[in-house]
Image (cartoon, rainbow, N blue to C red; front, side):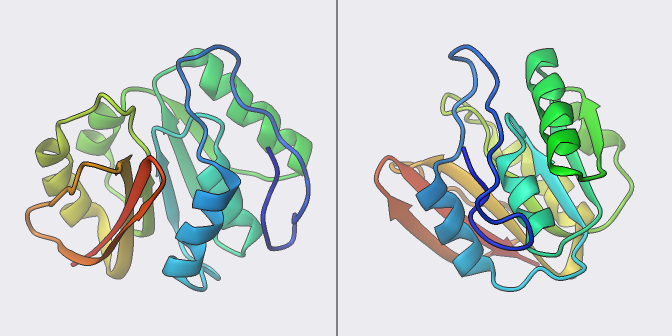
Length: 172
């Protein structure tokens, strides 16, 4: 995997070993950030972070700070190693995303979430996203292409399909 744009453009990083993590493809990441627009100085939250690809891309493009959350110890080790390799400083929280959302008190300009494809509890994410999202912030949710998620309390800015993935951007 590689960083698409920004200060770290072209630098490589790893995905966790095994089949439990499905890294966001370069194409979907690039498309997501084209839809998001500039992220300079944005506070970011990368949920179900896996390799940390989305948060790393945000940091490379000028966001910061970023909190990475994943329940897999292997994923957390990989994210920490990727951050160190790329010379980035961020917090990695090795915890279930829903539990982290319930206890998190910060406000985020950018929430990036790429839950496992068998995830179907989007309604449980909605109140947390609405509470944690800054007034002009965006929440980006990646789902299977057939899923058209809605999050109560948030409006859809855009929802687009890319192969087997769908990106939906929400705002307050």
